Length: 282
Ligand code: PAF
Image 1 (cartoon, helix red, strand yellow):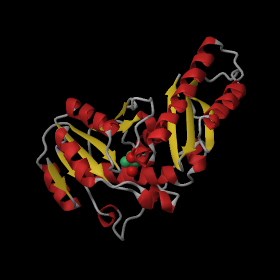
Image 2 (cartoon, rainbow, N blue to C red):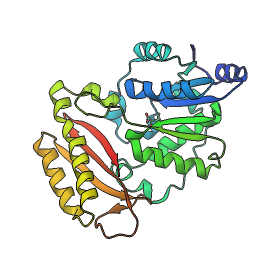
Image 3 (cartoon, rainbow, N blue to C red):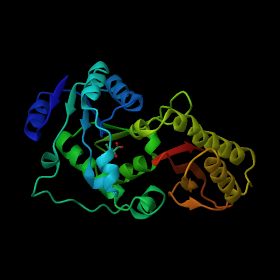
Image 4 (cartoon, rainbow, N blue to C red):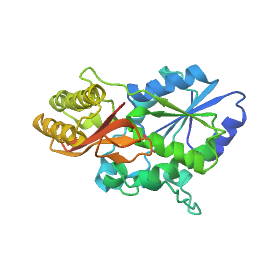
């Protein structure tokens, strides 16, 4: 496995590659969820490249950026074991040189709801960095985790806006969970064992809400939402930003009578001062 730190070394390494290239962008602090993306890419491509870069542009909270876990040595060991071919670990200057001009992406409504609402500018920051990596790496396939469902839809849109959708296949990999059912996330490193156990309530509420929705198509969505938020708080969460139902156009649905079908339920809630997100497909 090659570890590369500069754009020049990256270009040189990529020039020797003949065959399909799979790309897994990450911010490090790798867990089994990331590794499942690497494994999927390894199984589907001749070469796999992973980037490790904590992208300040997508953090709307300076403290969250400062606190973002950094575990580079164990990350590299895990990637080596997963048979990743190249790891790109650029500095901020490599990704955003002084002459770098960030594009603005017309993402529409998706940028204003749920994560977009609670983290203003977040998705522009994600698009800027992913687009920059795609430009440097030019992969055939791009792998993202379903845990960040809204991010997956945003990137799909960004690929279409940049006319990259025909060249780069977006592969969405299912969420990995711990033994309690908690979706794996680098932020989980900041949770106590007790908080991890309590966090099981997120997937429990999502599964119950889905079951209710499927068995009774005239269910009052606002009632499910209210009860789920109550249960999450009762389980020990400090706050719940949202527990929302969205349709194919990523609009938040308040009534089950709308013609466009509900495609997923998404939630974000804070425990131990750590903000967790999760979702379930309908
Ligand atoms: O999902 C993440 O870890 C990040 O948003 C990504 C895609 C690596 C971009 O920085």
